[in-house]
Length: 150
Image (cartoon, rainbow, N blue to C red; front, side):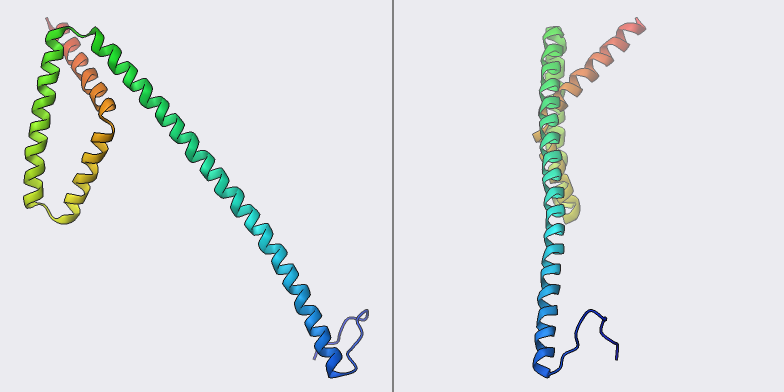
């Protein structure tokens, strides 16, 4: 057995020993509660920081989406009507082809592929403005390259 420290008295009876054990338990319990509280504070701060970062990202994404929509409108305003008509026709054809491809996928593809395709379609629907801006940009680049060859 180990010897108690010199500043602690040894128990002279089993009852005193039980009281010392209970005191030690209470002291350990308080120490554990204190450590747990410190850990909870760190966890809470980390969660708050993560929420702040998430909110900042959402705000930034909203700003970028608004800028993309504005850019798309500016580009659309500068396009000549024949180009707008061709772009609308091309977009309609692309939607039709995508719908046919989607139906074919639903018939032939395994379930995990179907789920990924549905996820991609949802992302495209959620980002229509960005896709439209990209399509208009691509049309402008195509026109510029075509005019450069003449």
